[in-house]
Length: 335
Ligand SMILES: CCCCCCCCCC(=O)SCCNC(=O)CCNC(=O)[C@H](O)C(C)(C)COP(=O)(O)OP(=O)(O)OC[C@H]1O[C@@H](n2cnc3c(N)ncnc32)[C@H](O)[C@@H]1OP(=O)(O)O
Ligand SMILES: Nc1ncnc2c1ncn2[C@@H]1O[C@H](COP(=O)(O)OP(=O)(O)OP(=O)(O)O)[C@@H](O)[C@H]1O
Ligand SMILES: O=C(O)CCC(=O)C(=O)O
Ligand SMILES: [Fe+2]
Ligand SMILES: [Mg+2]
Image 1: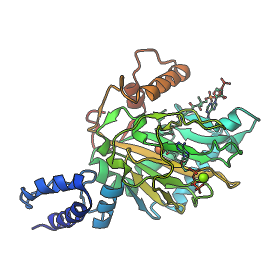
Image 2 (image 1 turned 180 degrees about the horizontal axis):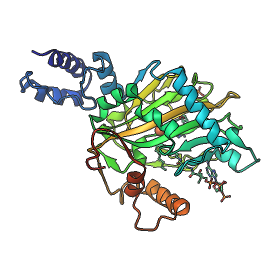
Image 3 (image 1 turned 90 degrees about the vertical axis):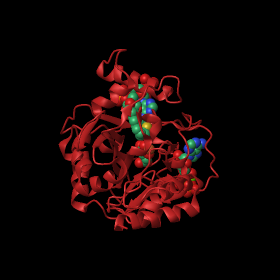
Image 4 (image 1 turned 120 degrees about the vertical axis):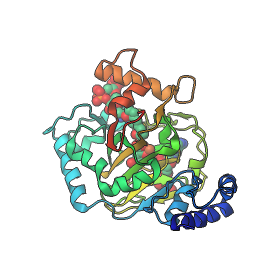
């Protein structure tokens, strides 16, 4: 028996004891020869990058946290570029600079303190370096396989809450925003650009929720207002067990697009920064979301595309993603 097959057997054995869903695939795996590498892990590829514990953790929980993955030097460069963008020293094609709704609708704030999020930085070579860092792609490949597209890029600058709790990000599944599949070949990489903890609104996740299906999303009914497109899962149960991901600068979490997650309000005076990219396999395919729960976000995004870029009715939700996607490894097959 090969070493890889050995590892797989241990992993599957463990998962077998914990989950019915994976038990089914293990049963079928027992019928195939271990000389061949059985395709029995649902969410990961065993490429010798992940440890047995990490494979088990991702299969079971839908995320893994890798400490100290991005260097201080790289993060300082991203921070510096973020500042240059906020000071309007650089102009990036396609970039959306988003302000917190409570700031946008009240007093005039300029520069970096006004910005809650940069969306779509793929045309900024300095920030886009994040998406091609070899140590990130090495992990991404474990979830997407060898053909990798960077589909969605963000730098989040969660502001100190103004008192309206608008700095929160409601609990959601990122797949709600994506008209491509399969979900298991999509992964988010999210790197803390400084220490993130409960006080400044770290990520909050519901472990194992990636094994459920895509839920209905809508704007939560929050008194103080909700940021544009910050949809939340509709029947969120605040009593569901959750995990706060406290991270140091450079720590990186990889998570599945069905994992329910959000972030709490920033109760500090500092701006909590993180940089992220959603990757998908170059072999993924686009779907039509008309008539599905994703129709509401699809309409909002198309609306924005027409206002911002003058896109006409012929531009589909899928088109808005195909335009933003960038190949970062292997081949762009069907994306
Ligand atoms: C694009 C697909 C995203 C895919 C995400 C994948 C998973 C990630 C999950 C998420 O992150 S979901 C959140 C994603 N959010 C966005 O993509 C929002 C992107 N930002 C924007 O679209 C613009 O920043 C926005 C339309 C909100 C503001 O654009 P402008 O810079 O043109 O704002 P402007 O100052 O001209 O204000 C226009 C109107 O928008 C209002 N506004 C500004 N910022 C807002 C805000 N943050 N929330 C709500 N409304 C806002 C503003 O008050 C004003 O309202 P009124 O017309 O009633 O006066
Ligand atoms: N009604 C709701 N619908 C969807 N998401 C919600 C709702 N209420 C809270 N959340 C989200 O749940 C997560 C945790 O919220 P909260 O701000 O209470 O976190 P916290 O500050 O980390 O927790 P605590 O206050 O207990 O320390 C955040 O992502 C928040 O946006
Ligand atoms: O950085 C955060 O607070 C969470 C952002 C997030 O989940 C998202 O934009 O999809
Ligand atoms: Fe998210
Ligand atoms: Mg709270």
